[in-house]
Image (cartoon, rainbow, N blue to C red; front, top):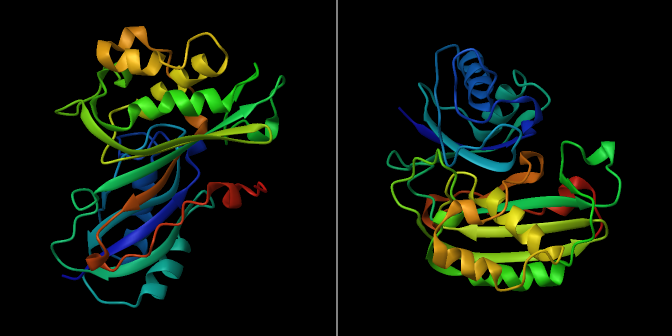
Length: 265
């Protein structure tokens, strides 16, 4: 059977995460239902990375084996006709039978958006994590550079994390202020459960002056989750891009979060 890859975008506000669950509304279940209706046979997908309740997807990637060949536009338009407004197929590509959305991904990028203002905004409630005290984004950026490279990230690992190893490689991390928004962008080979949200929580401690710039470096050495800051809200987290070798012929990821949110840089 032909194998296809799909680029999926979703607003995770109303969903209990990505992964299929009994008696829960998840993004995977909604997508598989739409695919099955379009194809008139049951279909299931494998994703590049699972996201938690309330987390959004700028570009999730899935693969599936299908019982017939159709052009890419037919998959995009046809499946979208059965999807709710909060979920959409953005592109479709026929791939080699050995392609795997998860195992062939060599990097993943997340963005975290903090709405940094004394009062909360209803317009950002489900699109950003709100923090009311002033944040020094430059100090946060400097502190974050300690995470670059290969490390044991146990200090930022959720207790329920099922990853075999806490050792991951951070390829890029930055913190930028754009008006009332502070955006934390991270790229790594893979992530532990809650890793990005735990890093953001700890960077906020640095941004407020509660901790010093070298605190994240200290946390890495301690490998103790109880020493780092609380997990920050899920609403500001976006799975932004999945990176693959060019030989698979997938579209280049477009992780321009600010353009998508309508924020001028």
